[in-house]
Amino acid sequence: MKVVIIEDEKPAARRLSRMLVDLNIEVQEMLHSVEESLNWLQNNEHPALIFLDIQLSDGLSFEIFEEIEVKSAIIFITAYDEYALRAFKLNSIDYLLKPIDEDELANAVNQFKKNQPQKTALMVNLDDIKNLLINPLDRKFKRRLSIKVGAHIKIITTDAIECFYSENKATYCFTNEKRSFLLDNSLEIWDDQLDPEQFFRVNRTFIVNINAIKDIVSYSNSRLKLILNSYSETEIIVSREKVKDFKNWLA
Image (cartoon, rainbow, N blue to C red):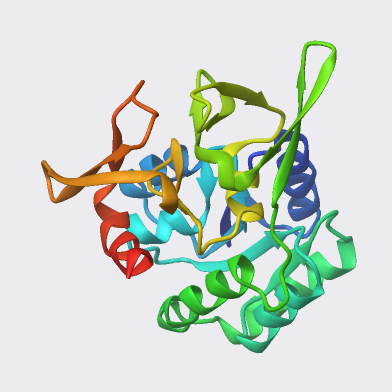
């Protein structure tokens, strides 16, 4: 049986690969990002099984399913809390909690071999799992940020932030004071910590605040262009695959 590992932390990917080899499983490929995974899956025969981390360096792994039809069974790799893990279990999808335990890995593989889960079952439950992960009940979201500015610590409320964006492998927030501040965490981590009623990830580079949107303009290839109250350094385009969800978010 051939498997593929999609994990952005290379030491963790190598460790998982060694553990699978010990189980006499051939690791066909190790991939580390959404973009790399899409390119590989579009040009190679899909393996029987994929070990898939949820948060990758350039986005959530769910974006892979939005772009292409994955023909492999999936065992998720996650560091999420108990509520998310229960969701996986209820939906009959295997998962491994980081750091991966050898016995749990063996059990997950054996479960896959016994049941051979079908692709359709995975796709039916994927959106439900994504919603549970992003919008769990009683979730507390970030309301303010503490940012180091020189020798000082600046407190910024999320209401004052027009957008979060990535540039040259760094992450920034832009405020209604028309200033950008460098942040420690990646855009993917902020996407998970912000209130989804107020903030929306419009593409791989931008998360926007609904209260900062000044205008929405039709753009080429069925996309949308956003004009914010103050931010104007780079065009903000809602990617084609996000347009439908974006319009629902606005409603």
